Length: 533
Image 1 (tube, helix red, strand yellow):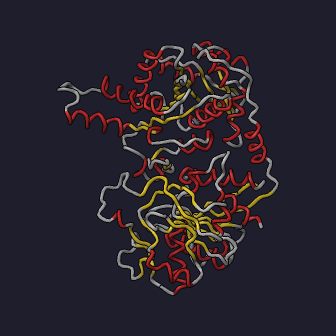
Image 2: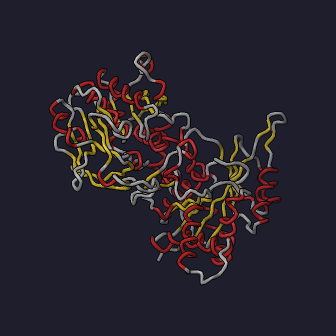
Image 3: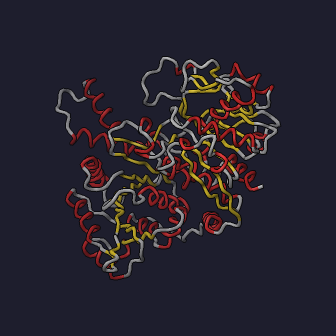
């Protein structure tokens, strides 16, 4: 029987302080001590999920194995603890209200007035506890999105207050992450914002048990004592979280600060010996001390916001460590690529990845990038739309189908080499209607993909509506591009490659969703290996 302890992580002073990384780091440390852990994210926005959000709004949309479109923090959770998440690991205000309103329409509340308290807070509590009843976990870590004081977060804070009262002090605790700003003019760290943030929590009935303070400069004992005194926490419960060069160093920093030990003591659980974290330290050592460097172009239309391609970027960190190198990513806006400048843009590039996306903005720049990689024998990796761009380019410039295109961009194209999936025809609702989640892929024996995976059946995650039009497959294979991966149930082409090229692979799925610190994705590893040669 699992222990089932609940840890709530809140944030104050400013957003984007790294609650997800702190939650993931704590989970990793507890996992290393032998406890089973999962993490969930509660998002205050009213969207049912981030699937319809522009990446500029909220970063990438992360897809779980069971097909949920979720917050990008779930990617961090999986990369750190190496355990797949599900739709139950991400809850939004939109989903909460949708569920409550549906119940009201069915008459479940027997004519009562439906209110934030108790109906919305009860639904939040139910969603928080679902993970505990559907998995054998010792710890359920719940990250509350947003910043304490936001109107949107108030129902979640109230739900936590109620849960803590119901569970008792030894079954739950609150970790509050805040910022300690440094004023250069007076050369001092200021704790007043943290004090005010904790006061806001107290006004809502929650006393944090542990404070994690983000800072650019070390906290001396006087600052820790001051924060402990005025925020009513123990001295050793004031945890320093210094800025580091890589997020993967945070678990080691939190271990040094004894965050996991503090949690276990407060929940009256045995600490045991501190885990050595040898594999993690080895990985961090490789990330921080690379022996080689490689320049990879990431071609996309959302490159101005790095979080738009977060999983891809982290997959390159994992693959770089395996290859003892640092991957220097050059983010290139596909809209700015044209025939006249493409040579200069890719002049010092050793590999090109064309990123996923939707719509026709920047599409010709992506197609040009695929052509440049093919014609100049530069390792090429196309993901989802990236594969589709490579297919369009090959049709136009090798097969001779000059007006080949995707029906997503041109409904009247004479050669729809990329077309809407059959089951997507007639679908008009956008949210949650794509081909989502994990599907099998049979790998063609003798292909480059089979050598990379070293197996003939793999499972990969999908998020798309359009696919390669298989009626064109024979003419592609006759001209030197072959299908290296096929879905066994639908015969959907999953992988295309050019055998005579140094390294040219496009995949319809999203391999970046499966790459973790302990299990880097083999496609990224081999792509970097080829780029280094």
